Image (cartoon, rainbow, N blue to C red; front, side):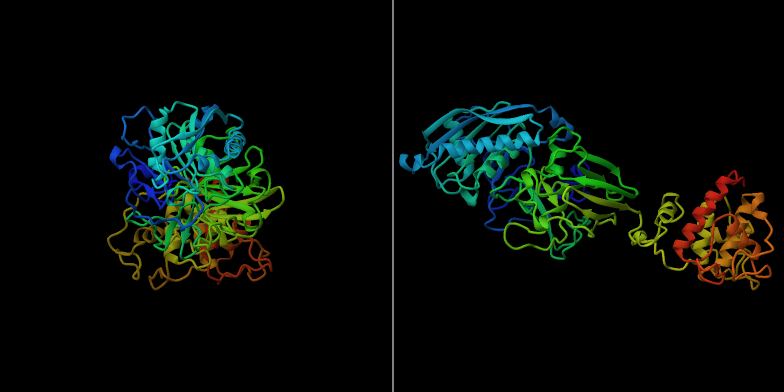
Length: 614
């Protein structure tokens, strides 16, 4: 991502988050480099950035570094590093079998007998498992095979050295040089590598790299496949972690998280191969899939910039159907979110169970731009190394930090239904008139409140009504008088122009005492008069001058009632049908959701009658 901040604001626009973090990651076992570093610094820890990045001590993990292609090196020289950048469909062009040079190494402080304890069969099985996995992920374009085997190679490296040093030393002594679709896999007779790592990988061009492994274990197949994921350009599957438990968080003005209780937990997504090491090999997330150009290229449906209310169907992510996952762009933050269904099929058979069976929400980025970040129903720090509730279940709703809502409608054994509700107002979903409220925003009639709300159930003030009508008319050229037409609306009033315009166009003459009463709630009868005058006087629609019928369309109105003609016209024009009990309730205050519906229908009525000619 950079969706949950990493690097700089300049780089951030290439990804999804406007927050920044300039740093590489080194967390007790992993070094990630984002920019070239001097050779002497290749094995040193970069400094942390503004966003906390955490690794739970003891997490079963594999470490990684990206680097330039390995050429023959002068003795004693360390390797420089730089980030791999693979984006989208470009990865579809990667096709080939990565030829592996498999070497078991006798370290200087280890005996031949200890070295012979490295099971060559287990080492080869790891390559085979990795090959089968990446074939499945790449639509059979990428694979790995053992091209050569060398056993008991004697090295000057020792077991007390860190994995950088061991890898660099053995590489130099072997004289191995990287080239596309080649890899060096080294096994050494130690139970774990430095900092407790179960493996270490150094990748160069997205198809070549080096892997260092300890003695084979139950983790070997997972870790080898994980390290080849690094070779192919992927970083770790991380999780958002917040003391507040919120599911999503925005950036602060200083480049960190707006919620300071939030951090990024490296390896925290254990529904992904690139998360913490485990015995099984779960599928990589759709964000990784998209970034690296895996599969056929049709597995993820791009819904684009979210708008309105739309429904989608997800199919098992570890399956094979086209458009089985969905990605969308938040209309306000412009961040990209991925939605995928984790069911216990294929490579997800062992992991997509209980709370990890359901809809997974993930983004590109995390601790680095090449990482991924899962957004779980609860981001409270979880105990242990493997979270048990990483997916969203039927009836649950995920809300982006800008207010876009993703509701899981159902989850079955084969599919899930989701609804993306992308109203520009964070509370519009509460209203039966959300479509009309959203239209108010997109028609530039209402921007709502500064906190992102529309407040649909609040009553409509007369000043806000004037502003809506003025904007509906197209913000016409109008110079308000130097002396206000209303004694309670000074020329300095925020809505003086639209209120004075209402008077000039005879949409409102105010009260007999020359007041406009801007802060009072507008009644349904006054609203009907304003709308009728807009259509009749301003737009000159003859139909708006229709006489009131002899029989009232509403049981609580008679031909003698105030504003009877205008209210009857509301029924005639289908702007208001009244209440289910046949009443109009003329003295009731109009709510903001009702006002949105009335103005939306008025606009349609005007359009159907030739438009406003004023």
